[in-house]
Length: 106
Image (cartoon, rainbow, N blue to C red; front, side, top):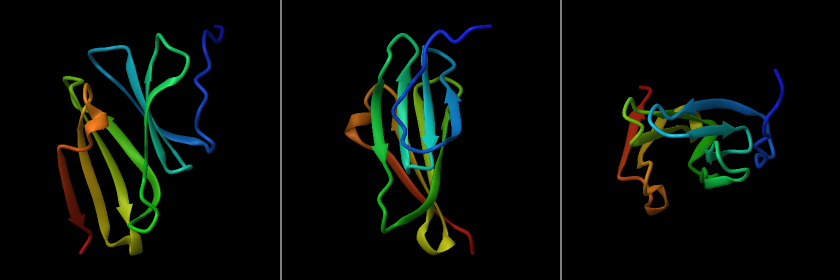
């Protein structure tokens, strides 16, 4: 085995990754509190999202749905009160989340 390409961009360790089932895309989530969208055919990331500091803690989690058309970003609420879950259209993620939920841990 040999390394074909290195994907650089996060300033902290990557702790979560999700592969798109329908296209050459993948998501990474890092301790630097960012989520990046990558295309396997390109060297740089094609999109980046940063978690808001005052309302979230910890590192985000990411996952594509089974069609590859939607992905979710989950982040822990400040004070460990629950989680935020944001759903994005993978083709138009720059437009922001099309659905946002708060799931209480209580």
